[in-house]
Image 1 (cartoon, rainbow, N blue to C red):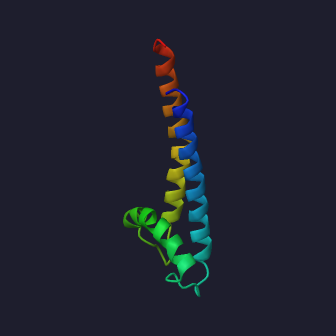
Image 2: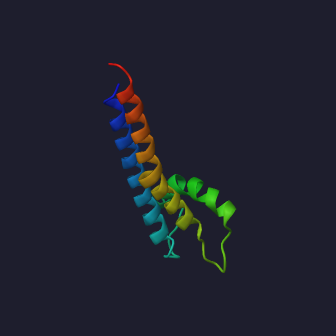
Length: 101
């Protein structure tokens, strides 16, 4: 059981890294107005990233034609990865060390 926890956390960190890369690609491609988001490679990217970005778009509407929701989306992913996950891992490790084997 104790070997599953580091594997789980590493899987979550890997997922966050991949999703962050997808968000960066989505942000960079949004600067090109001629991209058809209904074409297969772009529609897949849009389907993967837009639900998460739409959460933040409902909080911060575009201002002056600029969409600031990706900044919040990326910030939250980084906070989860760098602050919350290590704290939870440390808490679980402390709980396991206190249990008899």
